[in-house]
Length: 295
Image 1 (cartoon, one colour):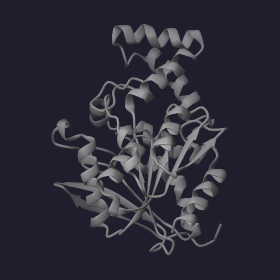
Image 2: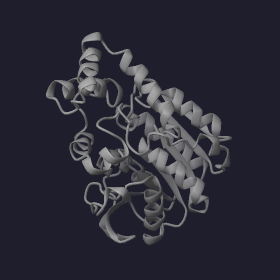
Image 3: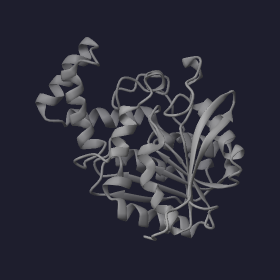
């Protein structure tokens, strides 16, 4: 790593009637710009900050907090929290910051958003990276339920008992939820502070509207979303990554890889949902290799 710290800029951008927070790390990007999309829907950009490593290798990394998230405005109505709105905001951010074509990195729900954007605005992309992303929510839910069934019986029984009562905020239930997260969201102990911050600052209005009470109970408005039939329309170079223990399982990643012709798939065998932290050095190398092949 260089002793020179990368340039950091941040600001507020007017986007479709709201104010969205953005941050840029690195210079003008002699190798191009990586635009990073956080998940949730409802998290903050902070848990993606390990991608700052790319700024040491000639890339500019740009983050923003989506509508209703982090340092950006809340929507006036929860009905505005939709994938379509997030796609429109993403295009407004890209053009508003004059980013030209970008390498679009989407984590988790951000990967789903990145795929939806690639289908709507392929002209804005140099490449696409789905980092534990998804295209088919029903498939993802089935896989998460399988993971839940494989939990130790005391944890599984606690989850099922409180779910039957609809008591998703019961402290005993939340403790059991964290056991799932430690296995399938991040296996590091302790968690990176950036990841803990993003989960602690999850936007309940957006997360509750679009997703549901937790990661494996997707009962919000995205529950039927499925772009799998359209994956063949994506023509930009694509990298698909997943962790062996991922809550969005390798089966989901493989369905994206199979759907996008010519895509590259990389499985991180020591990771769950946040391989860019759990196997940070190797992840950076895989990502750099992909980006350098697709300038």
